[in-house]
Image (cartoon, rainbow, N blue to C red):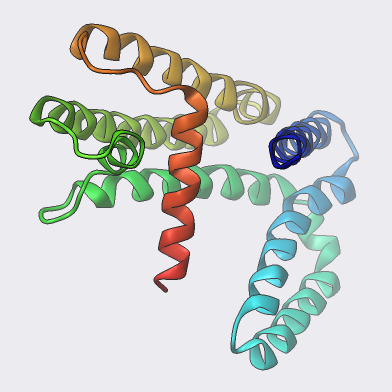
Amino acid sequence: MSRLLSIARGVAVVGTVAAYQAGAHYAAATPGAHGFGLAMALVPPLLLALGAALRSPRRAWFVPAWLLAAAALWAARAPLAQHFEWGLYLEHASFNVAMALLFGRTLAAGEVPLCTRFATMIHGAVTPAVARYTRQITLAWTLFFVAIAAVSTLLFATAPIVTWSTFANYLSLPLVAVMFAAEHACRRFALPHEPRPRMVDAVRAYRATTHASQASR
């Protein structure tokens, strides 16, 4: 039953992300869809902020602050709608910058690279070869997300908005899948005698790391 729930949850998440990306691209590609575009730009971060405020021990302060912010955005909806594409761009770029920081900060001296943590959670103690490889992969993922954010910024600044939206909404996630596939292919050559984890093991390790990080706060 728990496995079915996990699968259903994963399908729901993928479906939600796909629907959001299709909606965001529709707003960017359709003349006059400014109001819809503004909703696509503001509703997701507002919902995330509301959830964080409700979970916070200081929700007595954060929830009223959220209400004030939402009211201010509503009052300014007309001018904001004329530039809704900035909200979509900032969401896309900031997500990829955040992912780059998530991986990159673990490369600092005294830190355990994020991919090394994943390998440790899956296999237990890792060999020096695995430690070197997973450090390199952590760096590769850091540079990957930096590159996605950089390309997004370049296209947003120089190309038609539809071109940027096509990259941000229809190509970014497939590129993540390509990166995963490339990493697994490299692992076969770099670590031919080491056990290869399944994709689901990596996802579970990431979830466990995220939960442990949240619990320590």
